[in-house]
Length: 209
Image 1 (cartoon, rainbow, N blue to C red):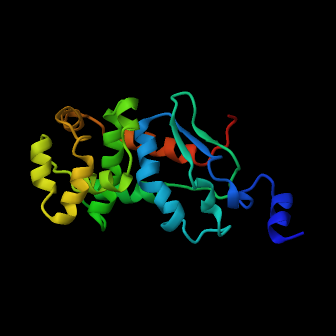
Image 2: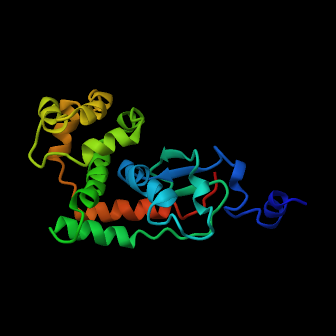
Image 3: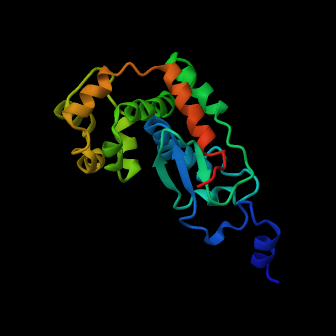
């Protein structure tokens, strides 16, 4: 029996057998805001960020090709289970300090709030139009605090060839209507905490298909 056969036989319900488990994991988020917190931030923290060196060493493999779904009646994931608890208490503290003007990297932490704020005003159809997350993340990390329309956001953000590359890929998404709803949103700290908790629960709770 080789090591792969041993692992698959000995740990049938853990993350360990997932070397070839692509496409099996589905994550269900009750809100789009919670989904964007995961997709734009927690996914990367699991694979090569805050939890990168956690054990078991390959705990992150469960998110490979994970399918993101929005379902107000579901919160959890299907497929092979993992054994690591992904607590977001550390992230909550960072963002709270940033919102109070305290702590270190303001741009990095406040953007997580911006991800959720954007998600809070999107329809499911609008969410499904999103593709390469890095392009959206780059814009949201540098969102002007004062309201702008599409032309204003382009002028404020696309100030270099590097940024213009990102902007061109998401320009059609950041319509005047979406930006108006974003800036008029009353989404605040308590809503963010709720969505962060939903995101945490979704990636830690095995559920039936």
